[in-house]
Length: 350
Image (cartoon, rainbow, N blue to C red; front, top):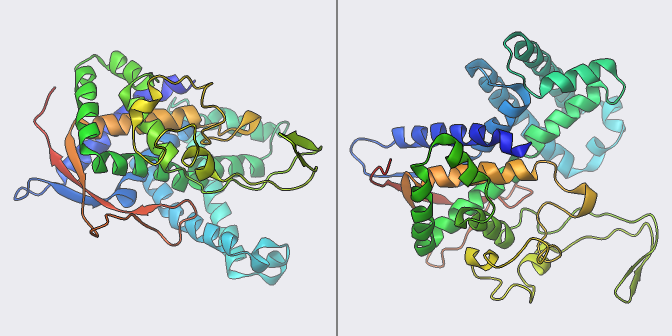
């Protein structure tokens, strides 16, 4: 299923990078931009097109306009307090009134998008989802709205983090960037179908660079607390049922003897490893049946953008401090970086 969206991701990436290139002033030979602010809308609109079909410019603007509402609501929820209880409804808090307005706007957008998808033969995923919600057997309208919100808005920071850190680490490690660019340019001359197949492959330097960046810079420092319904024996330790357990991501992904020189950025480490070998040494999309449903699409989106950007630009970090430390956004729950990169166009190879 994920492979069917690869051409969509590569098409979006091509348009996205062309737009970046068009913003280079005639008097300058490069462009600098904040990684998170600039790149976050790429995965957002790829997912939006998968859900709703090819979006019109007015639909895109509606989704942009809804984003600040969703971000403010999430901040209120994270703060806790009254807004996390049933009292918010009766006290008519600012956050509750904001939620009511957001849900009204969100449902209206979904209904309009469903009608447009059907009328214009877009075949967006919304068509089947909304029909099922209308039947009310497997899910109702509220559940459908929450599912779509989770897929699009709740995951915006998550996908933005993955996309941003991959580009930052490639900008920091220029030698590997040059090596990766050579591989990308060898495939960039291929027909569209073969280029998409290259993006799909998991045995390339491109794929390894995405894996390595997510290993070094996991989205969450700790997993969400989870508990088992029965006692579990882990090694010689018994974990009683209903006891919450959290996972230290860095202890698994970085500070783990399995990864030789675990703090070093080295995508080549994956060349001789099969997924089954690092299954319990790499926490990325979760474990077992509760893994992220969008993991295969996510990888292809990131690969498509990296490939397009590196085939167009040489990228480097804009220096901030002598130590080159990466600052993080204070209000972000996934450690979004405050880093700018510099893009210098390379000679066209295709």
